[in-house]
Length: 153
Image 1 (tube, rainbow, N blue to C red):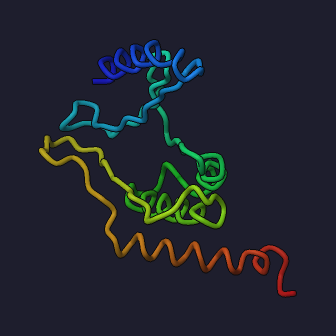
Image 2: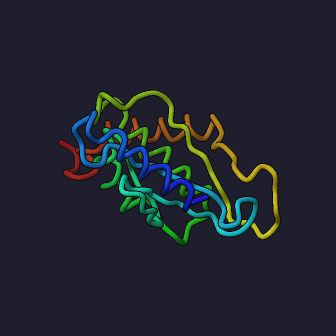
């Protein structure tokens, strides 16, 4: 699947780079299990030139640079995938609206777990209650941030 996606992205880049006046106008984030229905969960970023690079995480879009700073400190390889998914919802909520006005709405966080057993539904979505909880935590911490860093004023 990765090789097929790489070829498609390279072809689309060639087709559209002149039209949009960008050297690499397209990039794709792709997640899957190693053997589609089982194996390790993998994340790739497929660059416009058609090369797929394995990633631990990647923050994209307008809020990506802001989210990357938080993700470097909050996401941990030794944590359960569910705990990291909660942290992703927190990070998106932190960036949304107050930090970058082009980012808004509820986070949509998808989880793919490693599995040795083939399954027909390898993905799950972080539940709405957990997302609301992370949005609340982000809002509360933003309000208290100056006091957390500098103490009461």
